[in-house]
Length: 187
View: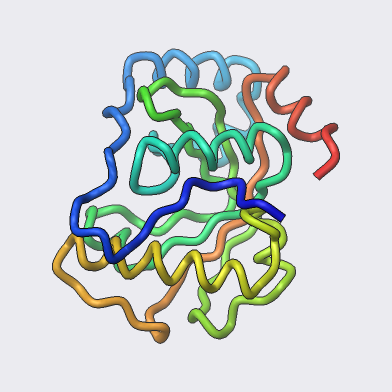
C-alpha cells in the first residue's frame, strides 16, 4: 500500500518548508460561529488553540486531509514539544482549530480522549486511529520516530523512546458540513 503522507528523510540537513502562520482573524471568526452554534460545548471548555499538523506545509495538508476525510481521528505529540512552545497539555473537551499549510482555518476539533504513554506503550488501536500510512503499529513507529528525531533535532534536543507522548483522540465538530462529512465517510 502506498503512503498517504509525503516522504520525509530525517537525514536530509535542510528543514522542511514550514506552513504559513495561522490566520488568527479567520480562526477567531470560525470560533465565534462555532460558539454561537454550540454554546454548551464552549461554556464547558472555552479555551482553544490555533495550529496545523506536522512540521511542514506538505505534512500539514496531508494530515489535515486525512482528518477531513474521516480517516484520522487521533494524533500524538511529545510532552516536551508542548513545554518547548510554552503550551499547556490539552484536556478532554478542549478545542483546537486546525489550519492548512496556507494558515487558513479548516475545522474545529474537540479532544475526546487523552492519555500519556511512552513510544513502546502505543498500541495498534491508537496507530490505526491516527489514520496514517497503512495504519499499522509498525508503520506508526517508523514514521513517528523519524518525525520526532527531526523535531527534537530542530530544537537542539535528542529524541528518546522513553519520552512521554500525549496520545489524543478527537472529533471534528465544526463547520457542520465538514463535521458531518468526516463522520459519515468510511474510514
